Length: 145
Length: 205
Image (tube, rainbow over all chains, first blue to last red):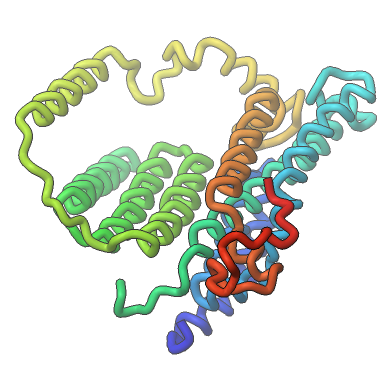
């Protein structure tokens, strides 16, 4: 899409704000709408937008599939390990009360960590699926649509 | 005009547009337009969910339904054909099945509790416990988050595992193929390589 000047300029302007908004949704999920799932999808959509405008090959250099292969399980592991951490600290599995001195602080900490895990896995899986689909063809000419 | 009246108008407008979008999706043969309309359908559903005060669900619908699914559908289209060739035939059986199912669903809604009824069975079981406990036990203002992440932490762990499994499944089925071939320094489908040559560094699977 080399000749789409407007699209390229506008997406370049938008992508940082999409990423920032994703982080806001991620870490503000306890107070406003949103959470790990939505943030992960938003974060992935920034990369997908980049890939749509600048081509999948450039996107692969920004976010290499090797990194994705690493990130997909890491989010789930973060979530599961939070559960084991609460067992080690004397509670039940995924009982965040024991993670800090104050049960409420423990809950806040636990929710923040597991939401981060959710966001990581969701974002990585979404980009992975996109790469898997989009990476199988060369870029389609505008006329072919 | 009262707030409830406004909401009714918004609901009617959104539902009308949903109907027209659905009809257009059925009628159109150009799959590129159909994929774009499916995204519009999701966006309209997200609007309806906002009108129902379910912002978290609306958020997900807008991001996943309107955003990612549309992109994936377009990605699939790039791999297949852009036009639906065979026009669907009219089938009386299918029409009867659809009418019967729709009629049964509409009949069933008469047994549903009224919208926002606090005595609805679904709100009687554990919901009061969550609503009362969320502020003191968890201290998180967004009850949806406290249910999702803490009270129902096991379920959410399962959901993340499902997404993880989906990602792994796609990786196995479709693979991140081009990157692997780039590693090998070969072009796509490697036409220069003899067919019986051993795969260099074939560590996958």
